[in-house]
Image 1 (cartoon, helix red, strand yellow):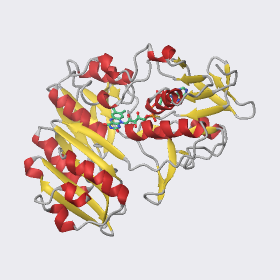
Image 2 (tube, rainbow, N blue to C red):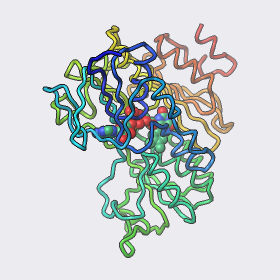
Image 3 (cartoon, helix red, strand yellow):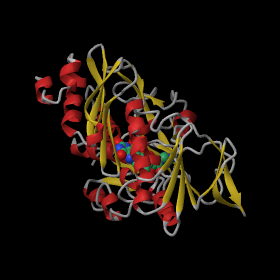
Image 4 (tube, helix red, strand yellow):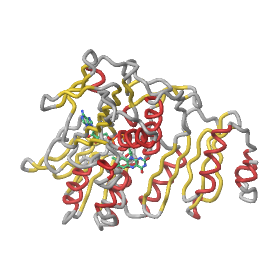
Length: 408
Ligand SMILES: Cc1cc2nc3c(=O)[nH]c(=O)nc-3n(C[C@H](O)[C@H](O)[C@H](O)COP(=O)(O)OP(=O)(O)OC[C@H]3O[C@@H](n4cnc5c(N)ncnc54)[C@H](O)[C@@H]3O)c2cc1C
């Protein structure tokens, strides 16, 4: 064991753990300390709105690694431990109890928290949010015995919770201020189609419908009031309004931030010994020619690994083809690439049949693909996005032309 200060990772989530595990896999010799504010060891968040909330996944399946992994890998994982400052001059992180930990390299993997939108009543008891395991258990308990749920926000998490709550037999209303579901991340074709699917499952999904206030009944949330004055009483309410990034530590330490912590291709912040990865990091994508910040498991894992490689002195150029998935009812949505900037959309397959893909092209090259129960299309798209090969739109929409022929 080295006597060096080693690597201190702030945030024991998907990205932080990925970095710690990769450092050990690559035979990093210094101490590795993973510091997490939550009481639980690192766990996966995606099932929290899907199988776990629907009651179809036992809690043991949430843990990313068994408890024995940490001592066996010589990774010190501190839980219930919050870092309150990064002292760049002293090369130390400061914990809430005043303890200080020296670092040679520091990794910020602090993710974010559920954003609370400025709606009157948003802080009332009976209003749930969903980012953490504890919040999922709280929401699940609230749904138990409830008859109705209002979801504010029709992004992925809001829609996944709507689907899980329908499975549990609740009446569900989803209220979205934008003109379609998943407006921030999915195309109009896909968002509109998913909206229709939810309505088919009995969800009262309303778009262009801002919520003006949460109804207060004796100090407890009792439903919502819409901007047009309509009141919808419900037993439970979920705010699903996106992420508030945990960039406070980085900002206070004087690191460059702008909707995320700015990192270079090797995931280094404006301080060369301090790295950032996962939801909280903003990097420059050579593939897309712009700065991006990704909120996905794939990015958290891969960027965590890239940080480990950079700490070990490798020449790292992190430039992924982003991908993401969402499960709603029996539908598996997989998205590869980024849609913004496309000049053409090509549909392959029939949405009526429940499996299809929408390809987004720019200058005849695929830059993104949204695939519903269409794994071959999704997998081929990942390769085509990376290669930058031009494709014939007619061949792309023709189901008689196999995806592998387009790859050739
Ligand atoms: C309900 C839900 C469903 C999702 N579904 C999908 C999906 O289907 N597909 C997909 O690709 N992605 C999905 N995601 C997103 C995915 O889970 C995130 O992109 C991923 O978890 C990001 O990992 P991270 O390590 O960057 O951040 P996080 O997982 O948020 O981990 C950050 C950790 O840092 C800790 N922390 C913060 N500040 C401090 C501090 N000062 N001191 C100590 N610890 C601190 C936090 O407590 C947290 O545990 C989902 C997310 C949620 C919430």
